[in-house]
Length: 149
Image (cartoon, rainbow, N blue to C red; front, top):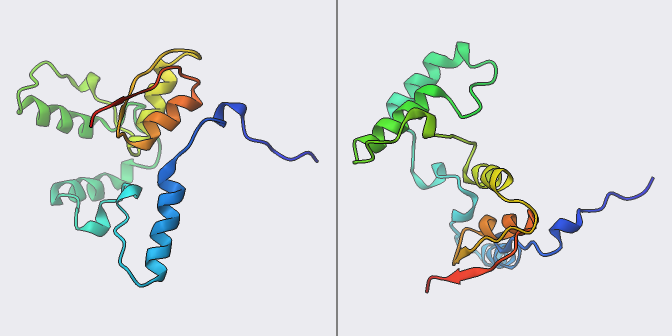
């Protein structure tokens, strides 16, 4: 059996948050230092909890949550997001404008899959969320970074 090899599209992709930064964090932890892992996108360990109304809705809707929802996300959640932004002055946003994913990484990849063709140019702000740069390189984008410092 031949080994499975990664796609050549990944040759220029680097995701530093899981490379040297992670190694240094592990080294510091081994020395007894406390490291806050803000790179994983999990807010719960830092005291950010879902509001009670969301928890109640989750419990109430468990019997109907045994399958897939709309591909754009749960309608009631999209509607709540729409209302949140309409109340803050974005009057033209509609529920059809709202897409919900399983985290920002999934949505970034979906957006790039939908919008980038091989060879397209994309300017990525720097510093950036690593997936913008690494992910767009995986989709064979051309271009570079724009320093915001």
